[in-house]
Length: 103
Image 1 (tube, rainbow, N blue to C red):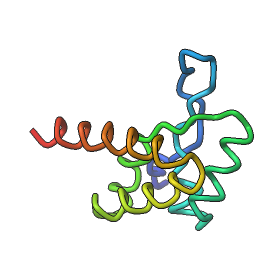
Image 2: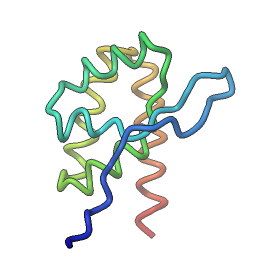
Image 3: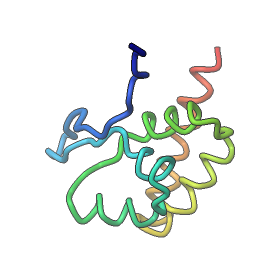
Image 4: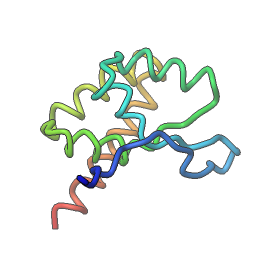
C-alpha cells in the first residue's frame, strides 16, 4: 500500500490581536483549484479572515513558483482588495522574511 503525501489543507492557524482568525493553506485555492487570488481575498475579507502570507508564499514555492512571480501575484491582488498602504506593508514584511530565510 502506498503512503499518501502530506496533503495541504486549509486551517485556522491563530488569531490576530484584534481577534481575527488567521487562515493558512490559502494557496490551495489558487494553486490547486485555480481560483483567482483577488476573488479568494475578497471572500476572506468578507468573512473576517486574515491570510497567513508566509504560509501562502512558502506553499507557492513548494508548488514550483518563483519568488518574484509569487510576490507579483500577491502585490496585484492585495492592492485591488486592501489598498496600496496594506500592500506596501505586506511586501515589506514578506521581503524581510525572504531575506532572513536566505541565510
